[in-house]
Image 1: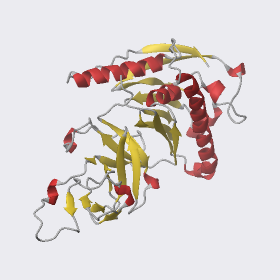
Image 2 (image 1 turned 135 degrees about the horizontal axis):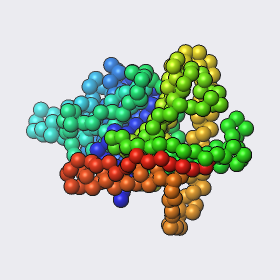
Image 3 (image 1 turned 180 degrees about the horizontal axis):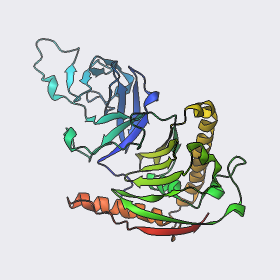
Length: 349
């Protein structure tokens, strides 16, 4: 089973990291992809290779509705990738430049992120009507996140996904004076999980009264955690006054590395005052997860036999079952049948 799933939307980068007229080269699912923003603010994505002499187009510039190569000035339309200009040609040349084309990718800017749709290899000119909806955070409309951070993980996407959804690693990996440490606070957790389209969720439940930080959202604060293929996880908090959401989206760079995009949304107006502190804590959390994954690679290099146990690792088992079913459904050209069934999971953490 490959670690890379296609025919999905993936986060390329936070939208505020791309200014008008800027070109950024990214590697996504092993493909060189150019992300750009035109003068009118519209974003686009195309293959980051000039078909003339192979130089990356990110070294060029945006000119009107096209991208110009820095080597010979060839220009390609951002809409369909067709070549629209070759400066060296004369009136005596008969070359039909419109037949020269760079692969383009569906690209959308939604809720403060730039998403790129990676289709099956060799699939081009996708009808927009056939595209699935871009993943969105509920309850926040067009709002961008208050905090958006990206971290490079030197591991395959599967290890990143099951590592970040793992409910038992917290007391050991996230040990700090401002969070928690040691086994003193261990207790049995008992949660109901149920299937959702292309994934599963922790059914909403009301947070205990002792969870004081959540009081910022008001009374009767509930939490819901949703995971959906390929790699999108949302932790949604709803109170009677405010809401918040932690969005985690993992984008494979290739088979051996990935980027973890983590964003926080909230509706508390004055919380912006402590945004620098919250950004620092977000980065620290991501770094702790990243560092343990780096250590894990030392052992994985020997290709050891691994194990997943019930119930702490059941979410990881579900993830692999979802991937297997998705690949089969694609190969057999049939609807996806979610293999996850509602179940109460219990673990100590």
